Every structure is written in C-alpha cells, then in structure tokens.
Figure (spheres, rainbow over the protein chains, first blue to last red):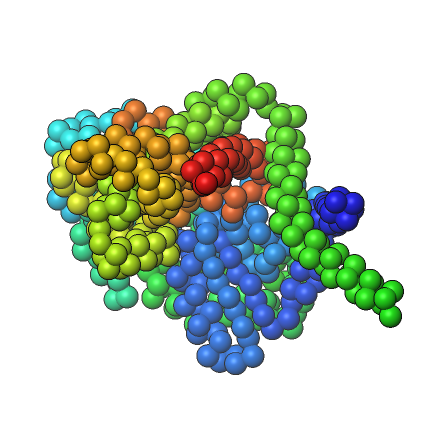
Length: 309
Length: 296
C-alpha cells in the first residue's frame, strides 16, 4: 500500500507538470516551420482549390511536401495562432481579437489574397423561387421569414442550412449579409459539400456555399440544385454568381485569404509556393477550381507585402 | 544469496504495482485537467448562466451566449431515445440467448451480437446519413432526417451489444435451482422466465442498461453526423439537436488555448465526464453485487 500511494503521487506530479508546461512548448513548431514541408490548414471553401495548386506545385518541385487540410477558417487561424501550421487558409479576414491573440503568442500574420469568391445562395432544384434580394436572404436566415410563400414560393416551411461556427463563410455571411444572429434553427453542416448534398435532398432547403462548389470541373452548374439570383435591393438587377459579364455587380463577392505565420524568408518553401499561387499558372488553377482570379487591386495589396520580403 | 532474491522480489513487486496504479493516475489526471481548465470559465460567467441558460452561441453577432441547457437536453433526448429503442430488443435477445436458444444457436448468436460493438461509429454514422435519414424523412413526411430520432436509432444499435451481453451473463449466472424449482411447481417456461428469473436478475439488467446509457451519453461521431446540430432548444424528437459531445467536437477546433470559449468547452467536457462516471460507477457496483448474490 505504501508503494501505491508513493507511486501515485509521483506519477500525478509528473502528469500535472506536463499539463502546465504545455503552453510554453509552441515555440518549437514555429522555428521548425520553414523547411521544404508546408503545413496548410483552414477554410473548407479554399480546400479544393489550394489542394489543386499544391498538387501542381509538387509536380515541378519534387522536394516539396505540402499538406492541405480543412476544418474551417477559424480552425486554420487558431492553428496559426497556436503555432501549429505555416499557412492558414481563410475565407474571411482575420478578426481583431485573433490578431491580438496572435501578437500575444509572438505570431505576426501576413495577409495575402489568392482568389476571389462569389458566395452563392442555393435551393433545391424543385423550388420555384429563383430570385431573392439580400434583405430577403437576411430575413430568411434571421428566422423572420420562415415560409417560402413569404419569399415568392410555395407554402412550405423553410429549412436553413449553414456552416459551423469554425467556418469563415459562416462569419462572413453573418457579418455582411445577415447582419444579425442566425436563427437558432439553422442546421450546422460540416462543409460546403455537406450543404450542397443536404440541399439536393431537401425540397425546402436554402444554403450558402463558395462558388467553386456549384460548378463541375468544366465550369458547368452541378445538378440537383438551383442557384439563386441575388440583388442588392428591390431596384437592382438580379445577378447569378455564374454570370461572367455582371461579375462586378454581384452583391456577395469576397476575397479569399492566406495568412502566413510570419514574414517568410526569400528562399523558403512557403515563399516559393506563395509566388506560384499568385503567378499566372496558379491563377489558372483558381479559375479551373471554379473561383475567380485576383483583381488588380488585390495584386497591389499582395505586391506591397512581397516587396518587404 | 537470500538478500539478492529479496531485492529481485521487491523490484518485481514495485513494477507490477506501478503499472496497475498507472490507470488510476490517468483517471485522476484527466479529472483534474478537465476540472482545473473548466473551472476557470466561471471567472467570467456565472454557473447559473452556464447551466440554466438555454442559448449557446459563442460566435454571436452581438453578445456571446454561454448556456448549455439545450445541449444537455440534446444529449438526454438522444440517450433516452436510444434506450427506449434498445431495451425491449436487447432484453428479448438476452432472454432468448440465455434461456430459450439451444447451445448451437447460442454459440453463433453471442459472438455475432458482440461484433456489433466492433463496428466503427463513423461507419454507422455514414449509414445514418446516406440511408436511414432519407428513409425516416420519407416515412414521417419530414423535410430532412437529421434529427434526434435518427440519432437515437443509431445510438440504440450501438448500445445493444452492451445491454444484451451483460443481461445474458446475469441471467446465465442465476443458479439452476431457480429454474428447477419453478418448473417443478408447474410453471411454463414463459412463467419461469417472467416470474422467477427476470425478477431475480432485475438489478443486474438495470446495471446493463446503465452501462449502455454511459456509452450513449458519450457517443460523438454518430451524433455529429446525423443529429443536425442546430443550436435551437429541441421541442420534439424530430427537431435537430446538438448534444454536448458534438458541440465540443465542432468547436474545439477553432478555439485559441486559454480563451473563455476554450475553458467553457472543457467545462462541458467535465459535465459529460461526471455524468458518465456516475452512471458507470453505479452500474459497476450493482453488477458486482449481482454476480455474488447467488454463489453458494
């Protein structure tokens, strides 16, 4: 019995010491960050596109090992702050709170814009509703309009599909479109694809996803869903996110970001990969993945930062 | 020489007691870790706000909300639903295996049922999403099948092996004199099972159900996939629910270590831990007593 007590105390002491010491050990991960290996994590919206770019990049650079995982923009930025990854994919800008948290932990995020997204609102293919104003979308997601007949459709209760709070799309849509809390009845889905699948099955559904998820490899609209034409207000045109000629007027276009955990070295793998993403070849992959290449303005934003490296 | 042997003896003793104590230490360590991290949340929110608040929304547009009542109710609905579905089936199978089936059938049935426990929960979740939820939606005329009912059905399947195999053990461990006595008094087989064996095994069966309950409370993957995870307070079994386990699994990925959100998730984890701990603890005691009751 004496032994047992002694050993218990000893082991417990070791264990608790391990727990409390944990927070101090993040420094290692950062300093080891810039080898040929690149860890990318974050937005599910960017996941497919960044994976495509990583694949194309590693074909040419055999030494590079790039791992791209999803989980949501919040997940990626949290991992960046916790010093676990090199690049965070994000479909929203980093929040002020996150920036202070990062600074507290000695992380200095560098923001690049690598593509543009037309956030798309989708419904089931059998739903007669084809057009909505931003205000209607907001009221639907706030839970103020609960029946499709109040939005020009049939007498059916609306089922809301949205992302989980880890998602940048969730935050972006809440801040910019809903401008209020989501209805608590909204289903929290795991990713863009999960929303597309749910909307296909549910005739009363409404959902929002990145434009890359509503087109196939050839740029055609996928079947089973209907893409809602949106307008800023009652007096403006209703525009589809797939309408190339009116792209500038589509009401919910947003930049897609990548955050670096610190200023990259000029020859580092992270720097080289970033340059590849912003190159003409990289932007071609953006297009092929269903998203929109960066604008001249974005290019200016990126170049200003690249100059400092 | 004698001294040498003594030392060897001691070292071996020390080694074995160390390994057996490790399990205990891990348990206490996890308990302390959850408790110490979770308790810090109450520096910024009150326990009443946490336990009695019906709204959970850490990423709200305006004020974040930290009430876990709807999460607790989500967990309870799935657990109770699962037990309602699993208990009748589980008991009937246990009685069949223990009392009615011949030894050959028994030899096949028992391992097959225990194999259900070996199915990875993510596979059951997949079946739930692709097959069961559209089926339930069609059958009940719902818009979708991601709700407490579907989750209960799948979690019910997951707790079946626990309920069946422990109830069966308890029934089998009843002394044969019970059966002989009741049959000698002219009881039919059904009367013997209903009036003699079942009452005698009742507390053991209750313990089996409790163990199943502990399993159901802690189930994460299935509910994450098929419960719908809406934050609203569920009003019926056909509403989507967000149980505590799924909530932690969804949100732990985005929290920064040391933030209030991080601490509240650990507090939820602590509540879960206490719930399953109490349930398992009680059922362990009951089973222990039950197994000894009729040993002469």
